[in-house]
Length: 130
Image 1 (tube, rainbow, N blue to C red):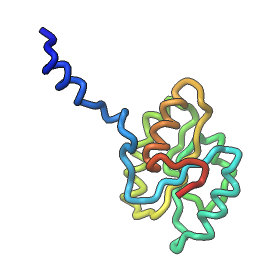
Image 2 (cartoon, one colour; image 1 turned 60 degrees about the vertical axis):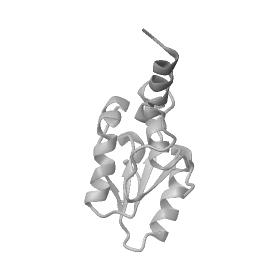
Image 3 (cartoon, one colour; image 1 turned 135 degrees about the vertical axis):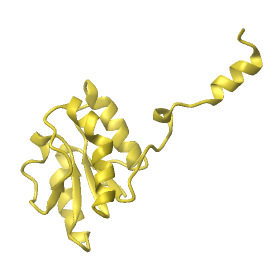
């Protein structure tokens, strides 16, 4: 039976996806819209002491970026990106990257959840904020 006590116990349990911040690598995650991507990526590269900046985004969005940005995923669809996002964030840690640029996909379909995950990995910051 659902008692008042049991209801409070169940309500206290939160799913990880509901947390304000989600898995984040040791690297600073900087989220950008595709429209701000050039400016944000140039700023990150000029500030990177080791010149090592990772990038996560759809292949169609990131293929023309500065070759000094290291692509951490090779995804052509939102479904692929949703599947590979956390592996890419962990790869940034494995490679010792200080910064990861996450490019937001369109806010439709799987893109809605991906945008949420990227923003949470960045600690809630978006559009080039750190």
